[in-house]
Length: 148
Image 1 (cartoon, helix red, strand yellow):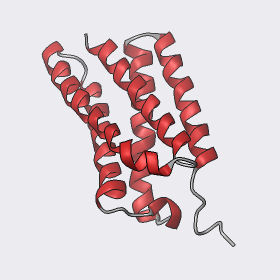
Image 2 (cartoon, helix red, strand yellow):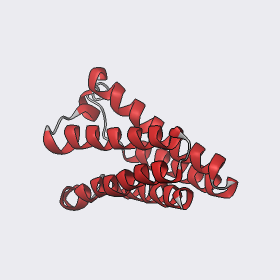
Image 3 (cartoon, one colour):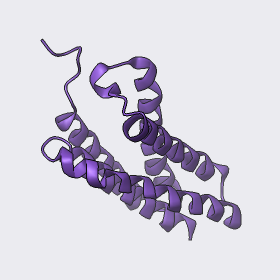
Image 4 (cartoon, one colour):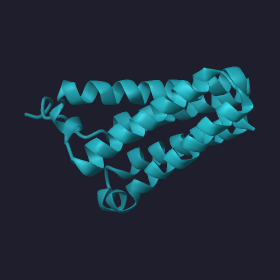
């Protein structure tokens, strides 16, 4: 039961992030109203950790789920609680842990699905990650460094 649940969580994560990236350029007010819903993915992630223990699966699931939860925490802290404009200011002390968790979290969803669920599922996750990256790059706020 864990593997399909993990796959569904990864799909939901990708769908949310693609939506966020595509929405932030032209509909930021909408994103400010409903963006908090992304953090609800913490609930199935915590449940998945219990499934890992119950089904006695590899500790790697717990590690990647913890990375995902850490990403949700840093996202909530930076964007919703402290409202730090780290993307615009390019403060590497703030940006580095965020980007590291973002990449690690996405890597975990691709690799764990690919290795332990299905190759096709892993390819789907990889494809969605590529779409997510493209959407992120295309709609990313301009940095203060790049402005003239």
